[in-house]
Image (cartoon, rainbow, N blue to C red; front, side):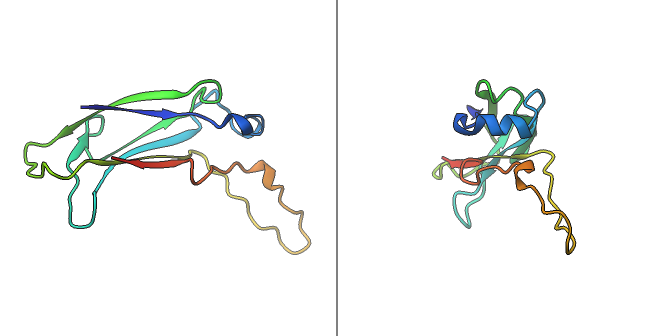
Length: 129
């Protein structure tokens, strides 16, 4: 079966985001994971691109202009015996080259935190069934 992931950038902060991130290249790392429905319940599906329970790819090129959509094929292995529990997935995004500011020494220049982009922790991950 197939699912579709969609990555878009919040238009309310796009002016600031475009200054810090170059959307002419893939600035994010996207990950799709098949996760257990609950403890004691195994995962049931695999992602075709990796043939594993997770798949990571570089993403984000042009996401400031239009949503970036990617289709994924998932399959259930022949050894699967669980046909009751649903399949649970997690789609997450993080910065590829995450710059981390260093604390200045005593009397050093204060760090301008506006130079370091941060993803909204609530908007950068979604878990769904």
